[in-house]
Image 1 (cartoon, rainbow, N blue to C red):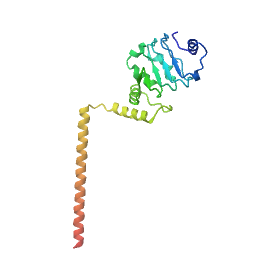
Image 2: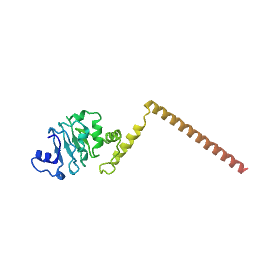
Image 3: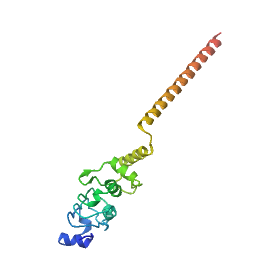
Image 4: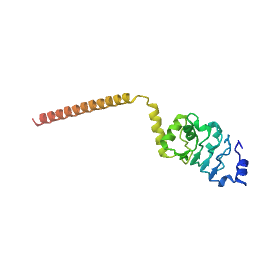
Length: 191
């Protein structure tokens, strides 16, 4: 079996599979090289194990990205895992419900960086996109746009502090001058 289909899944399961009831799909070591079939009808599916197969390219995983409530995905021991930016690509393209990839936790910060790296936004329509994910995305986007070195950032910060201190000193001088002027006016009125 090299291309995944409902027929292949049913045959391997030993009977007809009803997609809406499947919560865990284990197809490890089945010689799969193509997982482009849509899993959108697998509404209850949360765990997919496709480890030890023959997936070479991320485009061959397109079907996995359609699992609406995917929480755990295992693709270990597939050639695709050795490709550049594999982990960030998979995290960016999976639904935000994904919490574990290849046995390692997926953090909101990692997800935010993956979305940025692959020119994506947090999915607005997904019920799994949390405020924490959006905040992590905004922070990662801000960090990505600030290309100054740490030394430059420190120097800029020190300049900002010095400018603020100077502005505060001027304000204190103005307040003191105003206070002195009011005191003179009061003294003049008493005479």
